[in-house]
Length: 168
Image 1 (cartoon, rainbow, N blue to C red):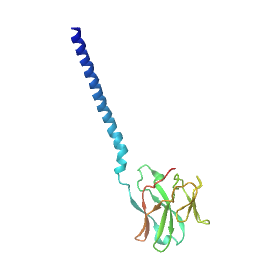
Image 2: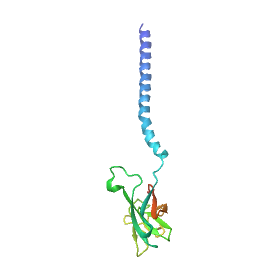
Image 3: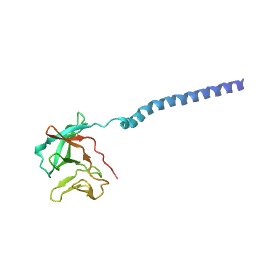
Image 4: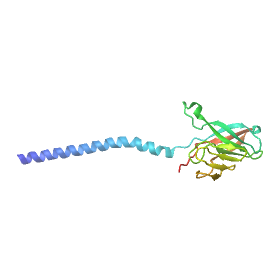
């Protein structure tokens, strides 16, 4: 009788162990699905691309580099003033423009244009860029990001998209 009791007790213990493992697996799966989904979902989302007008073509002089402001491509309803972004625009010829990001390629600090030196300079870590956006000196791993630009209906427009920032 004791032998029979021990085997039924072991089988009950085994059953409860297997049930515990099964329920834990189900709970772990239910928690893991949204976590994995939130990690993988951005890989499949299309980046927002919006053409933003930054000014009339006649308001820019050939050879000048000026700061222009535009609304971010994906502002949140509560973003307020932080939804505004900026870029450096240079008019090269009658119909050709170049637009550089205002953010340094190193850590994203705002660069400024120094007209006398014809250089973009980052005040944070000493990054310097030539007027074509290529790196002159300092820690930036690459040149300034360039936005696609077009002229449409007498307005200069840039393709506002998230700026890639490389950190090293």
